[in-house]
Length: 433
Image (cartoon, rainbow, N blue to C red; front, side, top):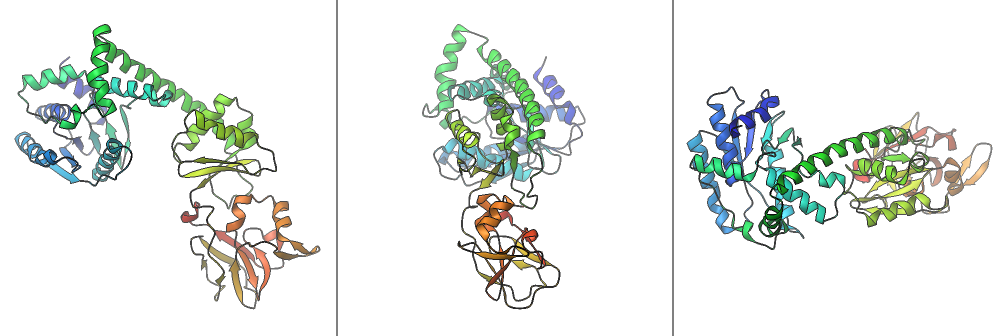
């Protein structure tokens, strides 16, 4: 089937999209994609087509690429948007450039618009091999997804089943001119090494290596769908409501997780953690086992990128970085009829007439005592233990003082029913919403 026909078939479900954007680097893949789309637009009712060129500023030679891309777009009568980005320094310049590029694409997409990229079957095979050598699991071996959400729209890879040789043939047949990125020749980049040194050897012995690898990636993607469905099923039980519904930190029931096999525990946690942190590698899962199996009176922590998991009240809680930092206090409350903003820790309000006297909000220092009706003076630490309040939240829990005496604890009105209830709403800065 001709390339244009295959492209049209892949894009048929998206004909109602308000606009199609092409991620146009000026290289072979995106040049073929843009040219084929322009030809299709001349004979079919397609959405408006535009091109986006992201200029990273990492090579002096790249300064000429926007001009090249503009000339191609002018010839095809396709509007071009050039976006210049700053690439953050880091261990992997290639990854940082990719992150900056896709962030720019996301910013350009309007509601329901489509970004089309030119990755092909050989790219998919290289991605699978690269991730296999890094020890990736099923999700990683699914390689590049044919489509996914991006910004307010969707990213689509319509050429993922097309071999590079077919793109080269199309480019020759239509006399296309494209950019050759000098960095693609550097064997210092792992993907370039695979492309230039490994894949040619594999093809000599197994001519269908790229096609077979791409098929394996598709099978891994299907397997991942099943694993995700199982995770959703298991999490439906583990995400039971917490007794502390005012504490909207992500949490899971520890008994529900323990009831699963270790493999299902890891699968459910991978799914749950996906929006919170980077996926733990194989060795890192020892941290989960230590957290799960610790004594009831222990305070284990599983450190992950951007935060950590802790236990409390037979639940596993996600604490983002910064949660353990001390809240700033004390804070005077001159107008207790109004909501009080707590620096870096949300806000407070009183439900009912405020008590007379000078009101002040403080945080635990140790040794606090609260008068409990019918029980007399009681140590606050013991009261919090009786209430089952997770230890990690106690340093941020606002305490209300009147004329220097502790009279109420936020969100625990049962401890001091003789006073108006004190309600705390934590801020996103403290990891809550």
